[in-house]
Amino acid sequence: GQQLNQSPQSMFIQEGEDVSMNCTSSSIFNTWLWYKQDPGEGPVLLIALYKAGELTSNGRLTAQFGITRKDSFLNISASIPSDVGIYFCAGQLISGANNLFFGTGTRLTVIP
Amino acid sequence: KAGVTQTPRYLIKTRGQQVTLSCSPISGHRSVSWYQQTPGQGLQFLFEYFSETQRNKGNFPGRFSGRQFSNSRSEMNVSTLELGDSALYLCASKPSGTEYNEQFFGPGTRLTVL
Image (cartoon, rainbow over all chains, first blue to last red; front, side, top):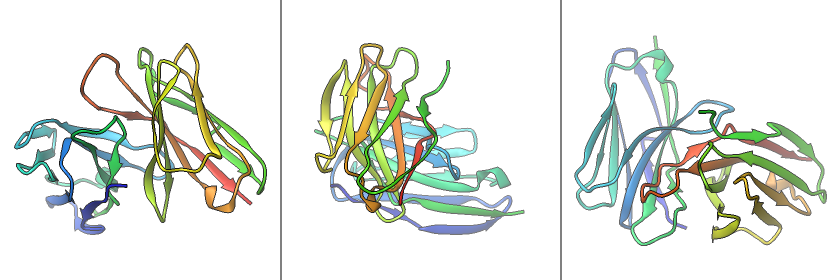
């Protein structure tokens, strides 16, 4: 299947700091989604992106759909303790079916 | 609206047994997809059902199967369980009538195979 390279694998940051993570692929995607997963729960959709170059915000979260359609990034500003969790990018191939391909996840730890 | 619900939340089985997991999508959603999540392989697509028909299938052996009912509820079945089938099985539903692929996940079923 498609490999989405997500980095970094993990991050330890101080409360109040900004965070940036990204996802790259060797294939072109027509949809990029960002999810957050807490332990023992399913992923929760944070942001959806559908157009190359699109920049979308959801509160303190901002995500962008790369111009090449092969990458996306997620920024979290002014982190707070409840931002702790694993963040996943997911993409849908431009000519594919509805199934999503997921990145390997970024584990975020926020130190109060 | 209620979210995606999955039952049971936890399940323990032994090798060789079979298991059936259930998923109820968000009301009005007709597309249901299943994913397997393991520490080693991450989140991997199993299959998608729409209007009681399997529309897409991932790269899993035939021991993994599913179905969808007329009320859009879906079940997945794993036969002849292997130790490697231990995983979190996630169900996701998608709104109908849109080209957008926002999928909403349930809490998952944690399957442990002993």
